[in-house]
Image 1 (cartoon, rainbow, N blue to C red):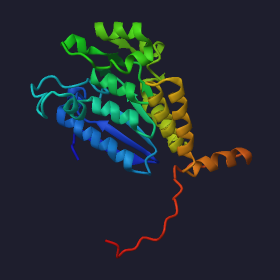
Image 2 (image 1 turned 120 degrees about the vertical axis):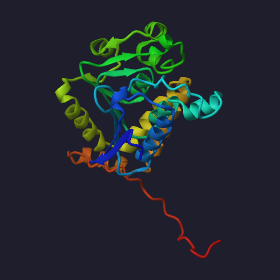
Image 3 (image 1 turned 90 degrees about the vertical axis):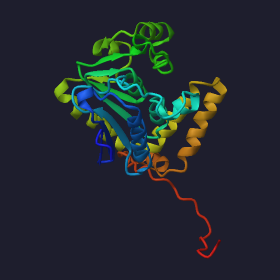
Image 4 (image 1 turned 60 degrees about the vertical axis):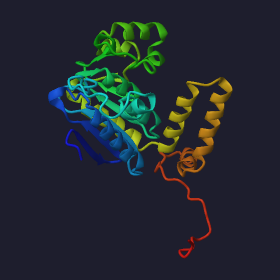
Length: 273
């Protein structure tokens, strides 16, 4: 595996660490592809029921590394190529992940790092956190323009996007951009306490809720409610949808496993060609 990333799993939690501390974990183009592969690895591992994203050292992610002049190295700057090779691929991967994703934030989460943090479901931050949609100050544009207005509203998002100024942790918290701020020496413990709680939750229900949320942002109320119903129907194929009501009736804590119910088919004929 690329040594600019660390990947580990424990207790149903996958941790993906950007390991480029000397550059404040800024992303090079080939790192984005590796990052996406690690997200896919966590998605496909049924034992993983929560994902934590973090940065090594004193920053979460300082965005795209603008030093090398090879940002179009992976093909022409058309829409399809940019969506596949640029950092928006990571935003899309995180939003569509049918598992909860937590960003553990300290230092800088700016540019692409800001957008990646916004794509996560929870953001636990140290007091020294700085965030910025800094693109405009680099003569670039577009970053954070999808997610930021959905957090802070049209007017405040316009201010943050067009000025590109840094906001500190208390400001970000007041704007609803953070789940919580914790002392730096408690950041890891608080993050993994939440991750442990989520790893024991009904994973398939979380996935269905995330999908209904994503779809509902871009459709009319009727379609939005249809996605709600689809999510409920999906859940019926998982054992947790039975375990939850049973635990409630029996007045006990549910034992969610994330396991699905196998449909019964005729035995497979090994000689079939």
